[in-house]
Image (cartoon, rainbow, N blue to C red; front, side, top):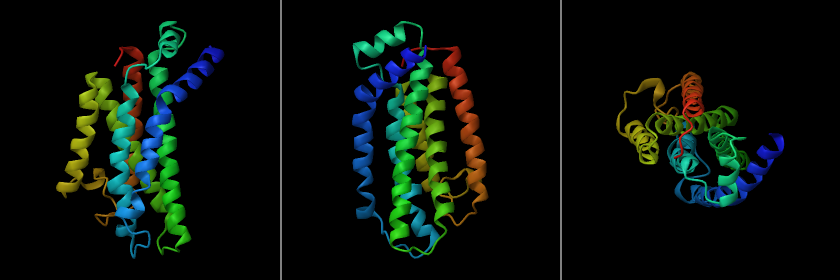
Length: 209
């Protein structure tokens, strides 16, 4: 099993994750163009992480459920030594790390320009948004088994957060709406709950996407 999983990781990262990761990182280069890197307050500093990162998150995590794109990966999955939900978990962890790295770089840029906000809280806010939107994407697919739904529901949620001001603690525009960091803890708990439900569902019903 360990050797099979190691082989799967190598094949998967080479075949599927690299291209999507490069696109995500490339799009991340647009943040200094679209948003100021010398914000004057917390709400302004939060804009890249609460507006732009969720869109990249939907794009990245939606690709979790694409079919295996090489014969070798399909062979490993079909061997039944590694269940399909392991592949989804591997992809989730990979993209979560990539997006968290992007958030960390953004915080590093803020630190370079001596932005006068609490950067640790801001980094936590960005990472929570990644996990919450990612968990909604995974939950959408695990309950519907539809790739279209996996993209549609988190996108609709994102649009609702922008257009509807009364979502309270579950609005991902936390600091942009001048709410407190306690909302992030609620969102983190929701993300953990959604992920637990999602992967239990995927494990019990390992159907191909």
